[in-house]
Image (cartoon, rainbow, N blue to C red; front, side, top):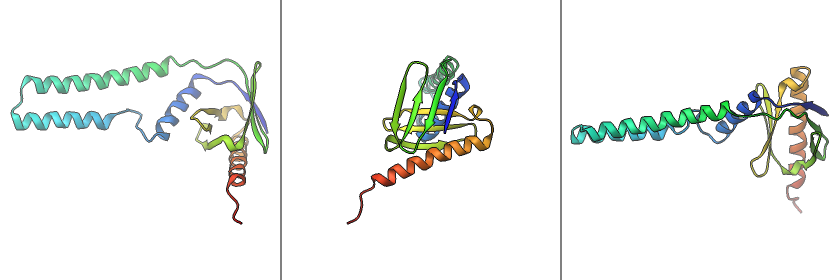
Length: 167
């Protein structure tokens, strides 16, 4: 199976969102820590009697969090996708990635996970890197599903072949 496509900014944003889910985080980042710090300041203020330093601490925490959200949004806005055409080919032995300048073959044993989402597929490698496979690269949803299921199947077969055999 073989496909070709170019990545666009929406693909990179989808990958960022997938990474947040994969790490078990929230899109808003460290919201629990922010809430905990604000609650701690409020509780301490109630116990000790509110003073200006309690309000300043709460304002500083919220300002830092808003700054964090702005920075994340700015990073997503400035993402740049490569205009190069990418080629992916699946064989039972390896995944072959290429563009006009390079060609790289990765054995399925080195693929950590194949993840299928609504508009994208992700093929993760040992070491944390991943390939983004946009659904729009395919003629229809069925072709996308077949490609990603084939990748999943090849990966699972390779992992089973690596499992130690019982004597």
